[in-house]
Length: 109
Image 1 (cartoon, helix red, strand yellow):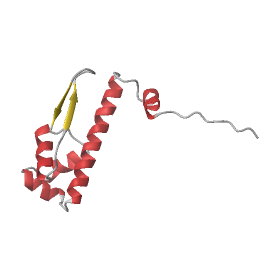
Image 2 (spheres, one colour; image 1 turned 45 degrees about the vertical axis):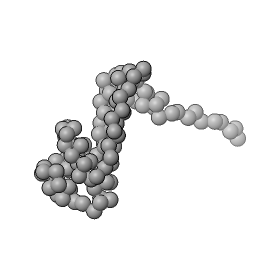
Image 3 (cartoon, helix red, strand yellow; image 1 turned 60 degrees about the vertical axis):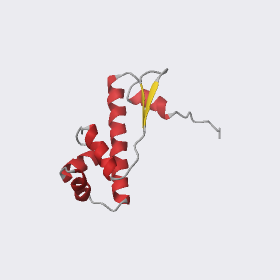
Image 4 (cartoon, one colour; image 1 turned 30 degrees about the vertical axis):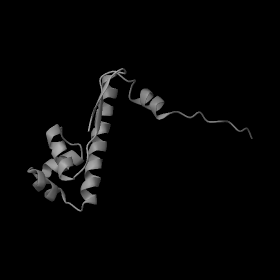
């Protein structure tokens, strides 16, 4: 019996192969939707950790429960200001880094 090594692939290699390389519109859409899914999941976990229902969180920031559900489930584009109000209501500290190119970036805390 021969012991053959199986080739392993990085996540980046698999994403390039099945979604497309960086800069490709399909890849850009995929990465954007992935980030929105992660953001929605973070909000959901923070809300549950504070024992709040979607309805209670919605009341804290003055929106309908459906809006919170849409944010958590990435079913609709939402205003950035709404997301910031959600984090404020959850007493979450928001820290962002925005990169314009490889030479410069902007940090917001």
